[in-house]
Image (cartoon, rainbow, N blue to C red; front, side, top):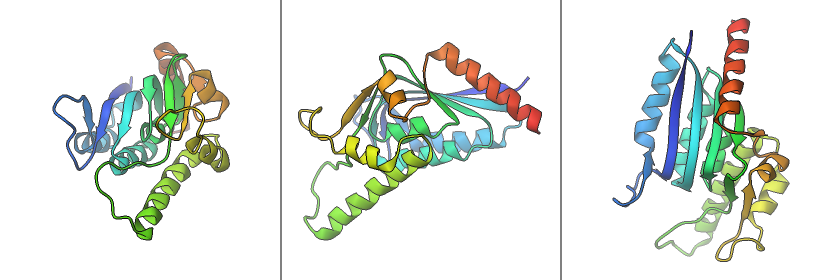
Length: 201
């Protein structure tokens, strides 16, 4: 019987800069080789991804999401707690996605800490980055670009930021996540996808 590989993405998604020593972090330089190893492992029949992340490095998050989306084995994600910011593309990168009823997703514009050069090129770069994120999300779920942009630029929900918080069923209604459910439902769906994949071989 094929085994299910479990991947847990928690805390801050760490990229080229290391997260603070007090922070829980998911390190992309450890996760990418692990995903590559899964693709080569004939014993792995499916991947279950558990998410509770505040987001983090955009480039690292997109790299992880692209790797998950390109795996040849069935994949299912489950949002527990939250999958915020760059965690959204990771959550939707799987063949099927779940969110627990109290789980949250925060969709907001690209932000950068520290000093930036106040030039048109900087804002163009931010726009390109945002377009990449929205393009990826749109191509891996049922939400449309226009609605994703509306949620991203919403001024009515977050006190110190633009964006939208989606809780449980709202994420499904907006077409971002496939189903509301927990670990039981996520594993059942993954086993079903694995059986279907086995029959088509």
